[in-house]
Image (cartoon, rainbow, N blue to C red; front, side):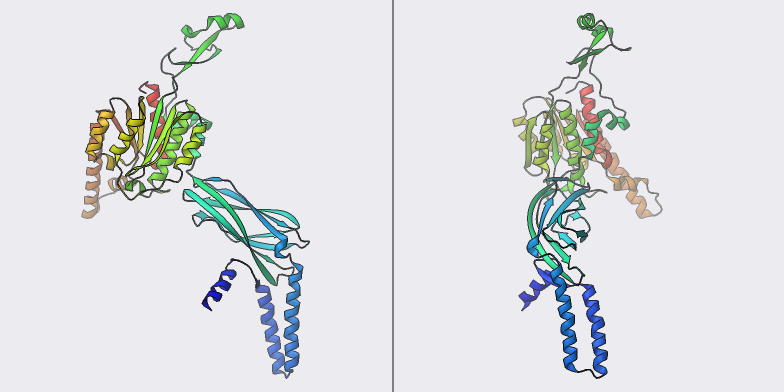
Length: 451
C-alpha cells in the first residue's frame, strides 16, 4: 500500500506518467457540489443527483480527447557540452507536436541541484516543432548527467493535465570561468592597463625576428632593413620580439587551506581561473605550458606543449579538480616536476602564503631548486585579517584582535622578505586581482629576460 502511494505521489510531483485534475476542474466540481447539495436539500431525488454527477464527469472526460496523445509528442534537449561556472547558459527544449491540437505545457528538466534556474517553464505549443529556452546558472565545477524531462500539458479547456516523462540522456561539463582569459586574449595590453605594465621587447635588435614594417619616427635607425627599403622605395625596419618557447609550469594547490570560502567561491576556484588566464597568456606568447594539480599526491598532470589548442587540453584535465581534506605535500610535487622538467622553467605556485611560509623544509628544498628554475608563489589576501587591522579598538577584546592581526601581518612580511632575498618570490593579491597579478609578474619576468 505504501509503495503504491509513493508511486502516485511521485507522479503528482512531475514524475513518470498520469493524468491529474487542474484547479479549474476542482473549482467546477466545488461549485457543482454546492449546487447538488442545495438541490438535495430542496428534495431532489438521488437518481437525479447521480445523473447530474455522471454528466459533469463525462463532460470533463470528453475534454481529454481534445489534447495530444502521449505518443504524439516528442522532445529533444539542445545544450552546450561545456558550461562556464558563474556564467548564464541557455538550454533549448524542442518539443515536436505531431497532433492537430495546440496545448499549454509546463515542464521541469532534470538538471543537477547545483544549477540555479526557475521551474516550471510554461509555454503554449502548436503543431510542429516548438523551441523553448530557459536559463541556467552553474555554481559548481564538475561533470554532470541529465536524464529526464518531466512534462505536463493541459487539455483544450484546461480541465485535465496529462503527464509524460521523456528520457533524454545528456552529459555536461562545468569548467572554470574563462572571463579573464578571454579578456586577455582579446586585448592583452588593455587587460594589463591597470597594472601599468607593458609587454616590451627585451633589447633593441635582440630576440626573435618578427616582421618587416614601415619605419616610423622613434624607431632605432640601426634596425633599418636597407635591402627591403631599396626594393620598395620606402624606409623599412626590422621588428623583433622576445624569444618564444620558454617553459612555464603552473602548480595548483588543492589542499585543505584552498577550501576557504571567499565572496565568490573558494580559493581553489579563484586559483584555477587565474591559472587558466596565465596559461592563455603564456600559450599566446608561444611558450610551453604544463600544469600540475596536487594536494597530498598528484591529482592531475598536463605535459608541456604550446599553442592555444593546448588550453583546451588543460581545461579537460583540471576542470573537475576539487579541494582535499589533507595537507599539501610541496616537496613531493617539486621532486616530481624535477624528474620531468629538465629545462629551465618558471614554477608558478598558486597556494596559501600563510601555510607556505611555515613549511621550512619545503622552503629549503625550493631554495636548491631555485638554482636552476625560477620560482614564484601567489596567494590570495586574507580579507578578514585586513578588516581586523582597520577596525577601531573600542574595547579590550577588539584591541587584542587588532594586535594579533597586526602581529600576524608583520610576521608574514618578515618571512616573505627573508625568502625574497634568497630568490623565492611570494606575493598576495585580492581575489579579484589574482589573475592579473599572476599574468603581470609573468610578463615582468619576460621583460627582464630572467626566464
